[in-house]
Length: 413
Image 1 (tube, rainbow, N blue to C red):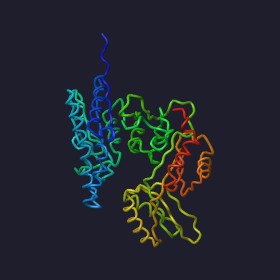
Image 2: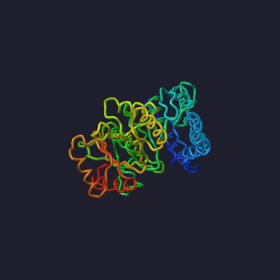
Image 3: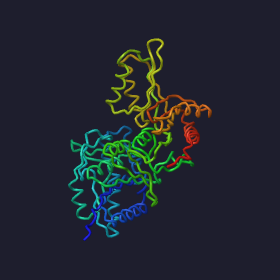
Image 4: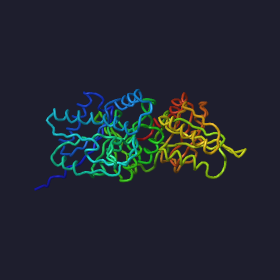
């Protein structure tokens, strides 16, 4: 007598665009049912519907332009709660047993850092109990309960992190991330019509793409997946086609030099003028910014001729007011000059693990931009990426010419 094969545990995450209205929620419910009929145990993580999160932020700003982070977490966590309860109702309507939970109810325990909390542990007993009853478990992403028993959120895009962390905690066999596009492309297909869907991409490449502004996966989610070597399948909510597998190594004998290009217009450049050129000053500046959870990206220090220098760096535009406030306090404390800022910038990047074994990629990148009369303001490189700050109005052109000249439209996926 043949023994029954063990049922698989599948974690599926659906983004806001996948459940943006009633019809889309019904579509997701049907997809979940098809997986459950295959004998799988399903855990679903959902984001807030459509533009709900942005609408809640705008609502808060109308009440108070500078609301407390605790109260923002209280407000922002409600969007996902609406999604998971409506999805459970849609499954009930189809005769499928399902139950919804908030992050707090399920036992997603975080630190006390509001709006950017880190997951410390996940209690899995309740999830497993409901799965063993044959129920589909639906969990509100993006949120948890702090060690101080406060509701916290994980940062924008944090539902990806919720899904991957849950997959790790319950020992899932598969983690799928559903979006409004069919997978991960060589560039944002909304900006570059010739962008090509990739069949495979490495953890390192997707981490660089995400860090450089590609809105494909939450960086911390990929870091967790890489740490525990959990392959992720990024696929479209409205198609049955295979998407893109994110894994440790892709099945090619030789890596393509460049795998993707990105454009980010969500950063600002801040310059601290007339900073004393002596040991310890830069450390003091960036230590203070780090203490206030300002995520600094690119840093450039000008050559010193008169024992003073200018230090420029980029930071998320959403934190500009906070960053300027801290920076002005810093320059006052170190006896530096004024603080300048520029919101009219964009960051264009190319990424690929093949850079490790190929020279001349940076030179080619700079030559392409120069040939197209696009001026570079700042440059940052890593082992597998090159990023350039350009004027915002030149950003899309820069992305398109780099995508074309590096032949990403002809890449083997």
